[in-house]
Length: 287
Image 1 (cartoon, rainbow, N blue to C red):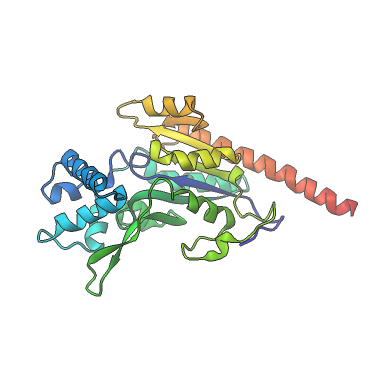
Image 2: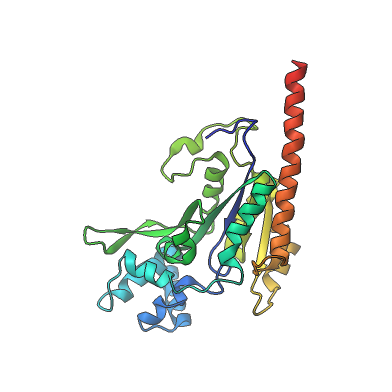
């Protein structure tokens, strides 16, 4: 979807999910307990399995979920969505998307929201956010289901390094994960969402490749920290290492720091678009 000069500018806000929109890992908010595991023991077992088998950690946790559910409950899409419905969200998250979209519209900017997460797509779809359809796309790990609807194999396994591919899809507007158009050449100005109009919001080291890619290309990376614990160790380190441009508490309520920051970025994109369009019109007049 190549951009035309007269198109309205688009801002893509890309979010990690666990500890970015919610205070804890999604699997730790019901599922792990349901299979009789202590949360810490479950993740230790996953890490041990990955290390001993030269296994991707995300594939290890997906395998572990299927194995531990066997004989205890049906591991299907509905059960994953049901666990997703129990996920706690940070303050202001539920009203955030509508508020930001309305502000963007006032400023002449279309705002789109994307999830890029190593967590489970099915669980995210089960949250109130997933059911309300606030995300343009949810890029997350997911399962393949057999003819009985039972999860039997990973369909997608997204880790911290392959997360970056989805930023290029968003840049070009080639959103289908199997669409090879993403490899096509786009001239400057044709990208639907230039990196300078991307925001990446995350909380940890697994977000660094995406944050760095967005930073290097003129976009905005924001590290968030838990407002309940006020632990800023990770975001302080990331800003010292130039991984992020800004940090804020994961408090999405109106008037809080994160809200003010996003509105300032929308304002900047609006101003740049006005100037760029005037330049475009002037070049046409000269011709």
